Image (cartoon, protein in one colour):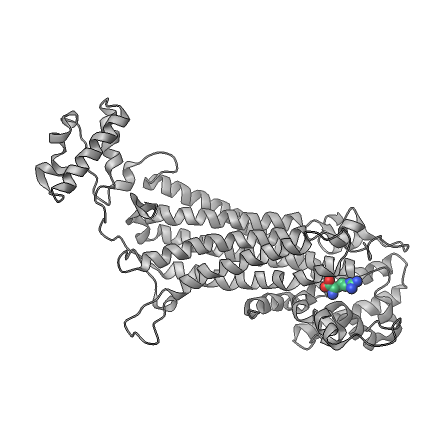
Length: 491
Ligand code: ARG
């Protein structure tokens, strides 16, 4: 293709390296939408006749319908999605097909495709991340959420909290992730279409119009920046990596919590595996794989930053090499979150007996503070008491927590009692602390913010669907892209 100025075809191996049809399949819907907007604008601006523009639109719609039925495979011999569509159009229309590329370059075309694709894919990522938030909040509000569990620092028993508080904290992270993904999406505001190869066009392209038709606020301010800006891809890769890092930390806690020595969470049978050799095994493989997916996500972000790091401004062919990782990033995120949400929803939250029965030590010191003892002194005395108690083999009765008044005469007449495991979380009353009232407040504020995020995501989806409907684009083309992403194979 496009070899007229050369005397021989592209070398075979070179053609293989040069092609991008595999990853471009995910961009097909975006490419057709961009082309429809461009064609309509060529007609309304008088650059093409109304008749030609309409024929091109009809031809593109026919291709879109074929693609929606899975009947438009990209031919690797035609290098990329752009040339595939143009070739198919020309086969249908003849000369009018050859008019589509008027005033356009594949450079502004691919930038436009990526903006449309990323914006759409982010919507899906937001929805899936919010589903994890939902699963965590629902689990936090389940009866298991009212059970107490050790919160760890340094992976040592620290203070007991409600499972609901622990899961609420994880939910808050994923909520911020969903809000971050949405912020990246809202940042995709300007249309590169009409930037041409790098410097715009001598034809009177109406860039404001195509921008509006594609759901953008307006055209990019600089054609030079328009063809080279990949900020949104990088931001999306970061936001995705951040979700994976949070998922991986949660996955790790699930793996540890499933150890028989810890036994604080029990995964449902849908999310455990056994060993091919040891029939007794009940392994948390899926939590481990959730943990593992973060590695690739971090790698894709690092690779994308490295790819653009020293590129001169303007379109450089290197940019093409960044596309597979972007498509793959969305696919792997989908696959990960689709497992994580039900894994949490179906997990049983257990309250194993305290490993360290003294996790209420701070509450004892606090009580001494209330009776006038300086905190540092209270800390030392509680530490000495616990050391002695341990030396005696942790007895009950007068030498144990039940006989505190012997060691701490200040407690005489005060209502202090060493908290039982299930009482401990409610002893701490500070804002954001472990008391159920605070857990409930946290969960309610997460629910409010998640609801707002969900409504905004859905409203955006409706707005984009309306914009596409104005071009007669089958919505299943975009749903198909979403499905394809989910089932995309690891490379
Ligand atoms: N296939 C290319 C890409 O994905 C499209 C732009 C090619 N432009 C060019 N001048 N070769 O980035």
